[in-house]
Image 1 (cartoon, rainbow, N blue to C red):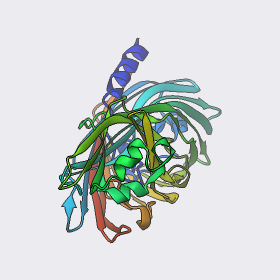
Image 2 (tube, rainbow, N blue to C red):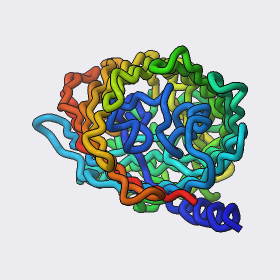
Image 3 (tube, helix red, strand yellow):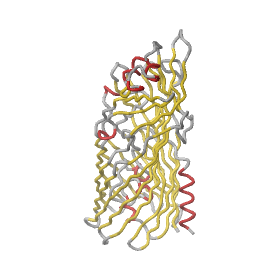
Image 4 (cartoon, helix red, strand yellow):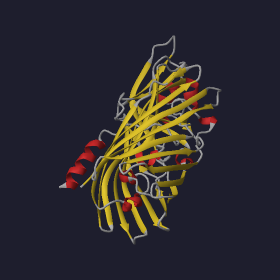
Length: 433
Protein backbone atom coordinates (compact mmCIF):
# COMPACT_ATOMS: atom_id res chain seq x y z
CA UNK A 1 0.00 0.00 0.00
CA UNK A 2 2.86 2.39 0.83
CA UNK A 3 4.40 1.70 -2.60
CA UNK A 4 1.10 2.48 -4.35
CA UNK A 5 0.58 5.76 -2.50
CA UNK A 6 4.18 6.91 -3.02
CA UNK A 7 4.23 5.90 -6.69
CA UNK A 8 0.94 7.68 -7.36
CA UNK A 9 2.30 10.87 -5.79
CA UNK A 10 5.52 10.76 -7.80
CA UNK A 11 3.65 10.13 -11.05
CA UNK A 12 1.22 12.97 -10.35
CA UNK A 13 4.09 15.38 -9.75
CA UNK A 14 5.83 14.05 -12.85
CA UNK A 15 3.28 15.84 -15.01
CA UNK A 16 4.22 19.14 -13.32
CA UNK A 17 7.99 19.14 -13.74
CA UNK A 18 9.08 22.69 -14.40
CA UNK A 19 12.16 24.03 -16.08
CA UNK A 20 15.60 24.18 -14.53
CA UNK A 21 17.85 26.86 -15.92
CA UNK A 22 21.47 26.87 -16.92
CA UNK A 23 23.91 26.33 -14.04
CA UNK A 24 26.72 23.81 -14.79
CA UNK A 25 26.06 24.21 -18.48
CA UNK A 26 22.44 23.05 -18.48
CA UNK A 27 22.85 20.78 -15.45
CA UNK A 28 21.47 21.72 -12.02
CA UNK A 29 24.35 22.64 -9.71
CA UNK A 30 23.12 20.32 -6.95
CA UNK A 31 20.26 17.85 -6.65
CA UNK A 32 18.42 18.06 -3.33
CA UNK A 33 19.05 20.61 -0.55
CA UNK A 34 21.33 18.28 1.43
CA UNK A 35 23.82 17.98 -1.45
CA UNK A 36 23.34 21.53 -2.74
CA UNK A 37 24.02 22.85 0.78
CA UNK A 38 27.43 21.14 0.50
CA UNK A 39 28.40 22.67 -2.82
CA UNK A 40 26.66 19.87 -4.75
CA UNK A 41 29.02 17.19 -3.37
CA UNK A 42 27.04 13.95 -3.05
CA UNK A 43 29.09 10.92 -4.11
CA UNK A 44 30.05 9.36 -0.77
CA UNK A 45 27.48 10.00 1.97
CA UNK A 46 23.74 9.61 2.60
CA UNK A 47 21.96 12.56 0.96
CA UNK A 48 18.44 11.16 0.88
CA UNK A 49 16.18 10.55 -2.11
CA UNK A 50 18.17 12.98 -4.30
CA UNK A 51 20.77 10.18 -4.52
CA UNK A 52 18.62 8.93 -7.41
CA UNK A 53 20.01 11.89 -9.39
CA UNK A 54 23.45 11.95 -7.77
CA UNK A 55 24.97 8.55 -6.93
CA UNK A 56 22.22 5.91 -6.47
CA UNK A 57 24.56 3.70 -4.41
CA UNK A 58 24.39 6.17 -1.50
CA UNK A 59 20.78 5.11 -0.95
CA UNK A 60 22.30 2.00 0.64
CA UNK A 61 23.71 4.22 3.42
CA UNK A 62 20.23 5.23 4.65
CA UNK A 63 18.11 3.90 7.50
CA UNK A 64 15.88 0.82 7.38
CA UNK A 65 12.25 1.27 6.35
CA UNK A 66 10.29 3.54 4.02
CA UNK A 67 11.02 7.21 3.36
CA UNK A 68 8.84 9.64 1.40
CA UNK A 69 10.40 12.94 0.31
CA UNK A 70 8.72 16.01 -1.21
CA UNK A 71 10.75 18.89 -2.63
CA UNK A 72 10.25 22.28 -4.24
CA UNK A 73 13.04 24.15 -5.97
CA UNK A 74 13.22 27.79 -7.02
CA UNK A 75 15.50 29.13 -9.73
CA UNK A 76 16.06 32.86 -10.11
CA UNK A 77 18.24 33.62 -13.14
CA UNK A 78 19.18 37.21 -14.00
CA UNK A 79 20.18 37.36 -17.68
CA UNK A 80 20.75 40.34 -19.94
CA UNK A 81 22.36 41.49 -23.15
CA UNK A 82 24.37 44.32 -21.61
CA UNK A 83 23.16 47.71 -22.79
CA UNK A 84 20.42 46.20 -24.97
CA UNK A 85 17.80 44.08 -23.16
CA UNK A 86 17.10 41.97 -20.10
CA UNK A 87 15.40 38.61 -19.83
CA UNK A 88 12.03 38.62 -18.03
CA UNK A 89 12.38 34.93 -17.18
CA UNK A 90 13.54 35.35 -13.59
CA UNK A 91 11.46 33.01 -11.37
CA UNK A 92 10.77 29.31 -11.93
CA UNK A 93 9.57 26.57 -9.59
CA UNK A 94 10.26 22.83 -9.80
CA UNK A 95 8.50 20.15 -7.76
CA UNK A 96 10.15 16.78 -7.09
CA UNK A 97 9.32 13.68 -5.07
CA UNK A 98 10.77 10.32 -4.12
CA UNK A 99 10.00 7.15 -2.21
CA UNK A 100 12.58 4.62 -1.07
CA UNK A 101 12.50 1.41 0.95
CA UNK A 102 15.52 -0.17 2.59
CA UNK A 103 15.02 -3.77 3.61
CA UNK A 104 18.15 -5.59 4.73
CA UNK A 105 20.75 -5.47 1.98
CA UNK A 106 18.36 -4.10 -0.66
CA UNK A 107 17.18 -0.53 -1.26
CA UNK A 108 14.74 0.40 -4.02
CA UNK A 109 12.14 3.03 -4.85
CA UNK A 110 10.88 5.54 -7.40
CA UNK A 111 11.39 9.28 -7.84
CA UNK A 112 10.85 12.24 -10.14
CA UNK A 113 13.37 15.05 -10.56
CA UNK A 114 14.12 17.87 -12.98
CA UNK A 115 17.48 17.25 -14.68
CA UNK A 116 18.14 20.75 -15.96
CA UNK A 117 17.66 23.05 -18.94
CA UNK A 118 17.94 26.68 -19.88
CA UNK A 119 15.70 29.58 -20.84
CA UNK A 120 15.19 33.29 -21.43
CA UNK A 121 12.36 35.72 -22.21
CA UNK A 122 12.96 38.98 -24.07
CA UNK A 123 10.32 41.60 -24.90
CA UNK A 124 11.65 42.36 -28.40
CA UNK A 125 13.66 40.51 -30.99
CA UNK A 126 15.10 41.85 -34.22
CA UNK A 127 11.59 41.84 -35.75
CA UNK A 128 10.02 43.70 -32.80
CA UNK A 129 8.21 40.61 -31.44
CA UNK A 130 8.96 38.70 -28.20
CA UNK A 131 11.71 36.08 -28.13
CA UNK A 132 11.92 33.24 -25.65
CA UNK A 133 13.53 29.86 -25.06
CA UNK A 134 12.61 27.25 -22.46
CA UNK A 135 14.21 23.83 -22.41
CA UNK A 136 13.33 21.44 -19.59
CA UNK A 137 14.50 17.86 -19.01
CA UNK A 138 13.05 15.59 -16.32
CA UNK A 139 13.44 12.02 -15.12
CA UNK A 140 11.27 9.32 -13.59
CA UNK A 141 13.79 7.09 -11.83
CA UNK A 142 13.70 3.52 -10.51
CA UNK A 143 16.83 2.81 -8.41
CA UNK A 144 18.05 -0.53 -7.01
CA UNK A 145 20.95 -0.77 -4.52
CA UNK A 146 22.63 -3.82 -2.94
CA UNK A 147 24.85 -3.66 0.14
CA UNK A 148 27.46 -6.25 -0.78
CA UNK A 149 29.06 -5.95 2.66
CA UNK A 150 29.10 -3.48 5.55
CA UNK A 151 31.75 -1.57 3.58
CA UNK A 152 30.61 -1.82 -0.06
CA UNK A 153 27.35 -0.77 -1.73
CA UNK A 154 26.64 -0.92 -5.44
CA UNK A 155 23.59 0.45 -7.18
CA UNK A 156 22.04 1.76 -10.34
CA UNK A 157 18.87 3.08 -11.85
CA UNK A 158 16.75 2.94 -14.97
CA UNK A 159 15.56 6.42 -15.92
CA UNK A 160 12.62 7.40 -18.10
CA UNK A 161 13.65 10.78 -19.51
CA UNK A 162 11.51 13.45 -21.12
CA UNK A 163 12.42 16.79 -22.70
CA UNK A 164 10.28 19.80 -23.58
CA UNK A 165 11.20 22.88 -25.59
CA UNK A 166 9.63 26.23 -26.45
CA UNK A 167 11.40 28.57 -28.86
CA UNK A 168 10.61 31.96 -30.36
CA UNK A 169 13.73 32.93 -32.31
CA UNK A 170 14.10 35.78 -34.80
CA UNK A 171 17.12 36.85 -36.83
CA UNK A 172 17.99 38.66 -40.05
CA UNK A 173 16.85 36.51 -42.94
CA UNK A 174 20.37 36.21 -44.34
CA UNK A 175 21.52 34.77 -41.00
CA UNK A 176 18.67 32.27 -41.01
CA UNK A 177 19.47 31.23 -44.58
CA UNK A 178 23.10 30.62 -43.57
CA UNK A 179 21.91 28.05 -41.03
CA UNK A 180 20.21 25.87 -43.66
CA UNK A 181 21.92 22.48 -43.99
CA UNK A 182 19.17 20.64 -45.90
CA UNK A 183 17.30 23.08 -48.14
CA UNK A 184 13.69 22.56 -49.17
CA UNK A 185 13.19 20.17 -52.10
CA UNK A 186 16.96 19.74 -52.18
CA UNK A 187 17.63 23.35 -53.25
CA UNK A 188 17.55 26.84 -51.73
CA UNK A 189 14.76 27.50 -54.24
CA UNK A 190 12.45 24.92 -52.65
CA UNK A 191 9.12 26.08 -51.21
CA UNK A 192 10.48 26.76 -47.70
CA UNK A 193 14.05 27.56 -48.65
CA UNK A 194 12.75 30.00 -51.24
CA UNK A 195 10.56 31.69 -48.62
CA UNK A 196 13.66 32.43 -46.52
CA UNK A 197 15.52 33.95 -49.48
CA UNK A 198 12.60 35.93 -50.95
CA UNK A 199 13.86 39.41 -50.10
CA UNK A 200 12.36 39.86 -46.62
CA UNK A 201 14.35 41.43 -43.79
CA UNK A 202 13.73 39.00 -40.91
CA UNK A 203 12.81 35.35 -40.36
CA UNK A 204 11.36 33.73 -37.24
CA UNK A 205 10.80 30.20 -35.95
CA UNK A 206 8.01 30.10 -33.37
CA UNK A 207 6.76 27.19 -31.26
CA UNK A 208 5.75 28.00 -27.72
CA UNK A 209 2.91 27.28 -25.30
CA UNK A 210 3.92 30.02 -22.82
CA UNK A 211 3.90 27.63 -19.83
CA UNK A 212 6.62 26.99 -17.25
CA UNK A 213 5.50 23.35 -16.92
CA UNK A 214 5.31 22.07 -20.49
CA UNK A 215 6.76 22.71 -23.92
CA UNK A 216 5.42 22.73 -27.47
CA UNK A 217 8.08 20.31 -28.76
CA UNK A 218 8.29 17.08 -26.76
CA UNK A 219 10.35 13.91 -26.75
CA UNK A 220 11.16 11.02 -24.44
CA UNK A 221 13.54 8.11 -24.02
CA UNK A 222 15.72 6.33 -21.49
CA UNK A 223 19.04 6.50 -19.66
CA UNK A 224 20.75 4.76 -16.77
CA UNK A 225 23.19 5.21 -13.90
CA UNK A 226 25.53 2.99 -11.92
CA UNK A 227 27.48 3.79 -8.78
CA UNK A 228 29.31 2.55 -5.72
CA UNK A 229 30.28 3.60 -2.20
CA UNK A 230 33.11 2.09 -0.15
CA UNK A 231 33.91 2.60 3.53
CA UNK A 232 37.70 2.89 3.76
CA UNK A 233 37.61 3.41 7.52
CA UNK A 234 35.23 4.47 10.26
CA UNK A 235 35.73 8.08 9.19
CA UNK A 236 36.31 7.96 5.40
CA UNK A 237 33.89 6.98 2.63
CA UNK A 238 34.52 7.15 -1.12
CA UNK A 239 32.02 6.89 -3.94
CA UNK A 240 31.65 7.17 -7.67
CA UNK A 241 29.04 7.11 -10.39
CA UNK A 242 28.55 6.97 -14.15
CA UNK A 243 25.48 8.48 -15.83
CA UNK A 244 24.90 7.31 -19.38
CA UNK A 245 24.13 9.53 -22.32
CA UNK A 246 20.37 9.65 -22.89
CA UNK A 247 18.58 7.94 -25.75
CA UNK A 248 15.86 10.51 -26.53
CA UNK A 249 13.69 10.57 -29.60
CA UNK A 250 13.34 13.78 -31.60
CA UNK A 251 11.51 16.61 -29.85
CA UNK A 252 8.47 17.26 -32.02
CA UNK A 253 5.44 19.53 -32.20
CA UNK A 254 2.14 18.61 -33.80
CA UNK A 255 1.74 18.91 -37.57
CA UNK A 256 0.78 22.61 -37.25
CA UNK A 257 2.35 23.27 -33.84
CA UNK A 258 4.97 25.69 -35.14
CA UNK A 259 5.20 28.69 -37.45
CA UNK A 260 7.77 30.04 -39.86
CA UNK A 261 7.34 33.79 -40.26
CA UNK A 262 9.09 36.30 -42.54
CA UNK A 263 8.67 40.06 -42.07
CA UNK A 264 9.90 43.45 -43.22
CA UNK A 265 8.63 47.02 -43.27
CA UNK A 266 7.35 46.92 -46.87
CA UNK A 267 5.96 43.51 -47.81
CA UNK A 268 3.05 41.72 -46.09
CA UNK A 269 4.09 39.31 -43.33
CA UNK A 270 4.09 35.66 -44.41
CA UNK A 271 3.25 32.95 -41.85
CA UNK A 272 3.37 29.25 -42.67
CA UNK A 273 2.14 26.75 -40.01
CA UNK A 274 4.13 23.54 -39.82
CA UNK A 275 5.93 21.00 -37.67
CA UNK A 276 9.26 21.28 -35.87
CA UNK A 277 11.50 18.28 -35.15
CA UNK A 278 14.51 18.97 -32.92
CA UNK A 279 16.86 16.24 -34.04
CA UNK A 280 19.06 14.11 -31.79
CA UNK A 281 18.98 16.31 -28.72
CA UNK A 282 20.59 14.31 -25.88
CA UNK A 283 21.77 14.79 -22.31
CA UNK A 284 25.48 14.01 -21.87
CA UNK A 285 27.22 11.23 -20.00
CA UNK A 286 28.65 12.23 -16.63
CA UNK A 287 31.40 10.77 -14.44
CA UNK A 288 31.67 11.53 -10.73
CA UNK A 289 34.06 10.65 -7.90
CA UNK A 290 33.95 11.84 -4.32
CA UNK A 291 35.02 11.44 -0.72
CA UNK A 292 33.33 12.17 2.61
CA UNK A 293 35.39 12.48 5.80
CA UNK A 294 33.94 12.42 9.31
CA UNK A 295 36.46 14.81 10.91
CA UNK A 296 34.65 14.62 14.26
CA UNK A 297 31.26 13.37 15.55
CA UNK A 298 29.84 16.80 14.64
CA UNK A 299 31.73 17.68 11.44
CA UNK A 300 31.70 16.06 7.98
CA UNK A 301 33.72 17.27 5.00
CA UNK A 302 32.87 16.30 1.40
CA UNK A 303 34.54 16.80 -1.97
CA UNK A 304 33.47 15.69 -5.47
CA UNK A 305 34.79 15.94 -9.00
CA UNK A 306 32.46 15.63 -11.99
CA UNK A 307 33.14 15.49 -15.71
CA UNK A 308 30.16 16.44 -17.91
CA UNK A 309 30.78 15.47 -21.54
CA UNK A 310 28.94 18.26 -23.36
CA UNK A 311 31.19 18.03 -26.42
CA UNK A 312 29.58 14.81 -27.62
CA UNK A 313 25.98 16.10 -27.49
CA UNK A 314 26.25 19.87 -28.06
CA UNK A 315 27.97 20.07 -31.42
CA UNK A 316 24.95 21.74 -33.03
CA UNK A 317 21.30 22.42 -32.34
CA UNK A 318 19.44 20.99 -35.34
CA UNK A 319 15.79 21.57 -36.25
CA UNK A 320 13.77 20.39 -39.25
CA UNK A 321 10.72 22.43 -40.26
CA UNK A 322 8.06 20.61 -42.28
CA UNK A 323 5.20 22.37 -44.10
CA UNK A 324 3.58 22.65 -47.53
CA UNK A 325 4.81 19.16 -48.42
CA UNK A 326 8.37 20.36 -48.00
CA UNK A 327 11.01 20.50 -45.27
CA UNK A 328 14.08 22.53 -44.45
CA UNK A 329 16.71 21.85 -41.77
CA UNK A 330 18.57 24.46 -39.74
CA UNK A 331 21.65 23.82 -37.60
CA UNK A 332 22.86 26.32 -34.99
CA UNK A 333 26.52 25.51 -34.23
CA UNK A 334 27.23 24.98 -30.51
CA UNK A 335 30.63 23.25 -30.16
CA UNK A 336 30.49 23.15 -26.36
CA UNK A 337 33.50 22.01 -24.38
CA UNK A 338 33.49 19.27 -21.75
CA UNK A 339 33.11 20.63 -18.23
CA UNK A 340 34.98 19.73 -15.04
CA UNK A 341 33.19 20.66 -11.81
CA UNK A 342 34.83 20.72 -8.36
CA UNK A 343 32.35 20.62 -5.46
CA UNK A 344 33.34 21.17 -1.82
CA UNK A 345 31.23 21.26 1.32
CA UNK A 346 30.92 20.73 5.05
CA UNK A 347 28.12 19.80 7.45
CA UNK A 348 28.20 20.67 11.14
CA UNK A 349 25.78 19.13 13.63
CA UNK A 350 25.14 22.13 15.88
CA UNK A 351 22.54 20.38 18.07
CA UNK A 352 20.77 17.02 18.15
CA UNK A 353 18.14 18.49 15.80
CA UNK A 354 20.01 21.12 13.75
CA UNK A 355 22.67 20.57 11.06
CA UNK A 356 24.34 23.52 9.34
CA UNK A 357 25.86 23.24 5.85
CA UNK A 358 28.06 25.32 3.55
CA UNK A 359 29.85 24.72 0.29
CA UNK A 360 30.91 25.91 -3.14
CA UNK A 361 31.32 24.57 -6.65
CA UNK A 362 33.79 25.73 -9.29
CA UNK A 363 33.74 25.26 -13.07
CA UNK A 364 34.27 27.04 -16.38
CA UNK A 365 31.65 27.92 -18.97
CA UNK A 366 31.36 25.14 -21.58
CA UNK A 367 30.07 27.59 -24.23
CA UNK A 368 32.62 29.11 -26.66
CA UNK A 369 32.37 32.82 -27.46
CA UNK A 370 31.99 31.96 -31.15
CA UNK A 371 28.68 30.11 -30.65
CA UNK A 372 27.23 31.94 -27.64
CA UNK A 373 23.55 32.87 -28.19
CA UNK A 374 21.63 35.19 -25.87
CA UNK A 375 18.66 32.79 -25.99
CA UNK A 376 20.83 29.99 -24.52
CA UNK A 377 23.24 31.70 -22.05
CA UNK A 378 24.55 28.62 -20.21
CA UNK A 379 27.66 30.49 -19.01
CA UNK A 380 27.41 30.44 -15.18
CA UNK A 381 30.63 29.25 -13.53
CA UNK A 382 30.91 29.21 -9.72
CA UNK A 383 28.27 28.70 -7.02
CA UNK A 384 28.32 29.44 -3.30
CA UNK A 385 25.88 27.55 -1.08
CA UNK A 386 24.56 27.41 2.47
CA UNK A 387 21.87 25.29 4.06
CA UNK A 388 20.46 23.59 7.10
CA UNK A 389 18.63 20.46 8.17
CA UNK A 390 16.21 20.28 11.09
CA UNK A 391 14.84 17.07 12.61
CA UNK A 392 11.22 17.73 13.56
CA UNK A 393 11.10 14.41 15.40
CA UNK A 394 12.58 10.92 15.12
CA UNK A 395 10.70 10.27 11.85
CA UNK A 396 10.55 13.55 9.93
CA UNK A 397 12.63 16.56 9.06
CA UNK A 398 13.14 19.49 6.72
CA UNK A 399 16.19 20.54 4.71
CA UNK A 400 16.82 23.87 3.00
CA UNK A 401 19.60 25.26 0.81
CA UNK A 402 20.35 28.63 -0.75
CA UNK A 403 22.61 28.85 -3.81
CA UNK A 404 24.15 31.99 -5.33
CA UNK A 405 26.02 32.17 -8.63
CA UNK A 406 27.86 35.50 -9.05
CA UNK A 407 27.43 37.40 -12.29
CA UNK A 408 29.58 36.34 -15.20
CA UNK A 409 29.93 38.07 -18.55
CA UNK A 410 30.86 36.55 -21.88
CA UNK A 411 31.13 38.18 -25.33
CA UNK A 412 29.54 36.56 -28.37
CA UNK A 413 30.88 36.45 -31.92
CA UNK A 414 29.50 39.88 -32.88
CA UNK A 415 30.60 41.70 -29.75
CA UNK A 416 27.46 41.57 -27.59
CA UNK A 417 28.14 41.04 -23.88
CA UNK A 418 25.85 38.49 -22.21
CA UNK A 419 25.60 38.58 -18.41
CA UNK A 420 24.13 35.86 -16.16
CA UNK A 421 23.79 35.42 -12.39
CA UNK A 422 21.47 33.28 -10.24
CA UNK A 423 19.90 33.07 -6.80
CA UNK A 424 18.28 29.66 -6.19
CA UNK A 425 16.88 27.65 -3.29
CA UNK A 426 15.56 24.16 -2.52
CA UNK A 427 13.26 22.96 0.28
CA UNK A 428 12.72 19.30 1.21
CA UNK A 429 10.38 17.54 3.64
CA UNK A 430 11.04 13.86 4.43
CA UNK A 431 9.17 11.39 6.60
CA UNK A 432 10.15 7.81 7.52
CA UNK A 433 7.80 4.92 8.25
